[in-house]
Length: 453
Image (cartoon, rainbow, N blue to C red; front, side):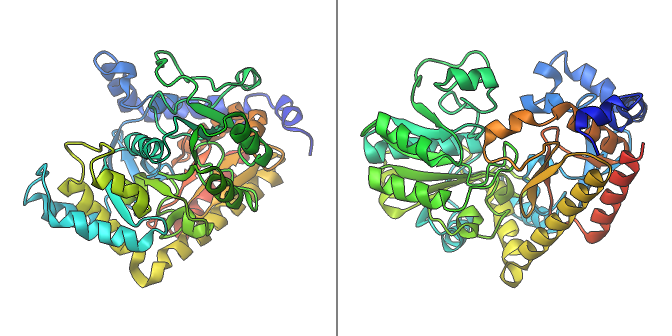
């Protein structure tokens, strides 16, 4: 079979006929290129979020979506496994959400005051989420994580927190460290800020540990006695390879935080309402002190949620911990959330059984096809979110991802784009309740064509 390098050396062109596919995509997406060039003159980078710059050959512009498909401005229809980077758990333009928003917004978009949807959704969330005695609302994952960290500092009187390499908790200065560090940055240690302009206000607040490394976490507590307010993690490391916790690791985090008087925070911005109706804490049967949610909970509308135990949330209720936001709990977001929860909770969460079945079928099919054609490939993740990586062994932590062949994946993703299958540039795949076995069949057939180029 040979190594990836040997296999690629035998080719007359880059893997997956990337040059030919790029020419084809350029021809098919001229309208997107024209718009992107126009946008760059007035919109920084031509995109509204920096990560969108990385699509090859350039960011595409979309006109509409329905179900499992999205259509660009040139009329190309794609099977979509990006799902807006995760929020579209019910697919594009789900009628249940559109109807709910349409009905609600006729009474007003936002009040900056109270309305019935606030407690109707909070009652549902506190029934579903194991850690949530109470919840509060915001609009983005970044801001709700900041509230969780603020609350942990207030509850413990401590200023530092432990985060893990490769875990993403938003773009605030406090947490945008050691997200995707290079080997050199890892060896330097200390938690490298990502990008320029990161301030010094919170320098050293984040103590960096390696995912699935119990000894590293013990050392972090030992070297910072009585100073750590919380341990925050993606319970399934979705932002870096969808690396699951090793057996017992989340139990360990629960035990050591309780012993050290720190809070355990699950960042479920991605895993919430994707792995199970009660999120990763239900899926892994570990209850944190606090948990953050966004993406899927809004089904495409901007909403984030903090859920937590009463003894901590009462500090927000009493005003000791400040939580504010003009658009918090707005009608559009909460009407969407109520509709999403109604759909996902139907028939005792039967949709999740389908999501896990389809996810496993797609993962296994991708791996079988690529492996049969001589590629070292792994898939990692759970249910409706997983990563595909050109890597020889299952990763245990972010550091293992440094050996992945990212250029090969970029060539593969470009070839799939030409075959009308849309994927994210980082190797992450999302599935929605709108995806079907027919969609999976079509996707695997496209992969077969791509690998035979």
